[in-house]
Image 1 (tube, rainbow, N blue to C red):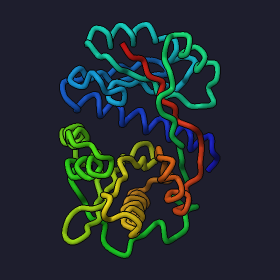
Image 2 (image 1 turned 135 degrees about the vertical axis):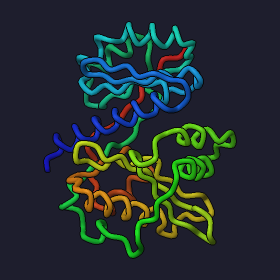
Image 3 (image 1 turned 90 degrees about the horizontal axis):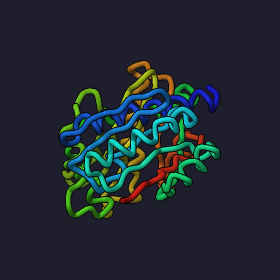
Image 4 (image 1 turned 180 degrees about the vertical axis):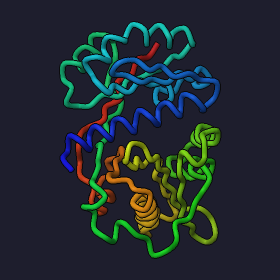
Length: 252
């Protein structure tokens, strides 16, 4: 499977996750236009990840900037963003002209499942399901969010459509991941390990569980947005870097 196909699946799945966030994380709404999907969550006016547009076609997405600004301003959202492929240089210049700035840039990664090493497609243990609140809680502990923001964000999302996994340490959830199966792709997100459990292979275990279940359900690829620290983990599992995923943010 070539990089272009994987990159398309990465962004399409990422946009689908954004619609779930916008549709369920508080009283929100979703905007779907040619080349763009966005979520509006007035209950989180300082969150440019919940209040964000995904530019599926950067050139077409730019046509809707005025509407985005109007919708976010009307919802009293003070920080909102646009996710853009780092290779879209002309679109980036247009966003800069509109007063948006890059506040985050993360590696987008992917792989064809049948090209992953066999060990990445199976787990030594039966996949362990988790609930989405647990995924959010472990992420909050991992990233030092003392306000439980990610637990609150993920708790209302639909279990079943979003699949969650956990690995325990001393009987407590210590590493988690979430997966969305969409158009034959397994999009993995919210991978995290609590500080006391790091460097024990638990994140690798939940990733193998997620990949193994995706293979069993007929997914042919898997994609994700990595952190700089997590890129090595995913590369060791067989993922390769596809693009930079930039968050362009507008603040009032």
